[in-house]
Length: 238
Length: 238
DNA sequence: GCTACTTGTGGTCAAGTCAACCTGAAGGGT
DNA sequence: ACCCTTCAGGTTGACTTGACCACAAGTAGC
Image (tube, rainbow over all chains, first blue to last red; front, side):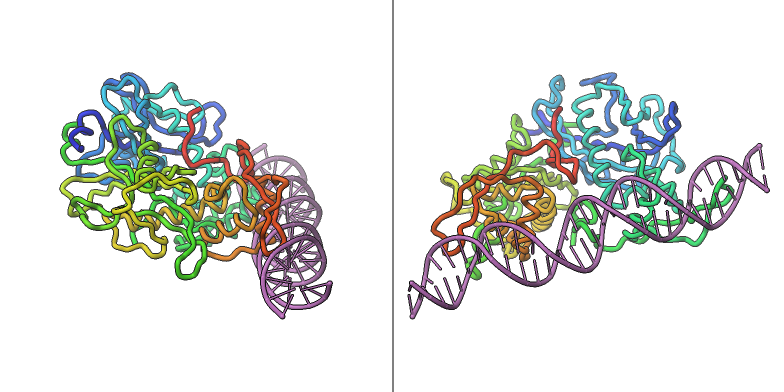
């Protein structure tokens, strides 16, 4: 049975990588993701998600991490499986059937980026994807954005975009960029502080043109949240 | 690359099938799932989740549905992808690497069941799994139960266990069985009615040894819920 | 036929959550 | 000295939730 599969199926791992950058037009912080130009058929010349065929000795998450590193030169600060896409008709023009196990990741832009193949990689705001992408990657991107937005509302993953110390206003701007809407500063502060996912460092920022904000760091994760049972979507070996 | 994969990887689709039955000891409604005894290596003789290698011309969800039908003779009333398991070391004794895309499903016990291979299939309460199961299926079952419990609290999937008409008490007993704790009848009624996922049929049950309950049916799904964006975890083609 | 029992149905009440809004604090800029 | 900006904290009303209470409406037993 395995032999029959072999001739016509390819198992690939791809990753939707999210980062935050100011938008060149408006200057507002927005969600960006890297795309890779395909250099072979099918969909040669189209933009696609970073990824590739799964190596034999590689765990799925490791392959997803490699996709991040190879396309961006960055280490993912959060990595989570999104979905397995495997409909028979999802790559109509391809000679073989491609099944993609897709992850999504968060990276910090400011970190030291290793050299990447800048020629075939480019970053785009999630609302300005140069479509249509290869395969069903447009659908995948939309789904990944939905998941990120949903998860950010009940899980403290937004910290992954920020450095070790940050003000609540910086954290709020991350949330606003992800959710694409303004949040009330006062209510945001209350919510974040009440859920106990950040702790005060005692320091304050200096050199701001206004009242200096307190600086916080993300608190060590307690094993359980008040609202949901799952701390991470990924299953954990006991 | 595809050829290299082929010799050592197998892509399988399995399904965690949930059903409700009274517990033989206590009589209380509890969660059950069917297991299949493996008749070949690796893990020959161990119990495992229903499933098998993915056929070439078969969509992933279709393969998952087949796993339900072949093991139970029932049609799944709800089907959703759970996770893709593919760690290199998850089948230590297997000659090849097995990557499993796992779904979970809900079935109604009372429906006409087609003939199945009863010899090698048996049902067990989720708390009394005859472990250890083959591969990492114990982990998968635990994860699937967590997901079902989480999802039932914010999505009206519990109706899938029930026939077309049901009383709110029957629906409550479904929730109690899934969540494994008692729920206040009055508060449960208020919550369910306020979320508008059921509608009154106007009829009442007869022949009960107490006040006859109103009968409800599940309301046609509106396209959007108040609390969450996602109606279904699965991505939807636009 | 009367009473006890069981479960359905509806309501109250206090605690908690959340969005909208208001006010003062504390810096730099001019 | 004054203005502007953002930080920080509090108030209010609408809504949700869990605990609890009371009555409704059938059957079962005597």
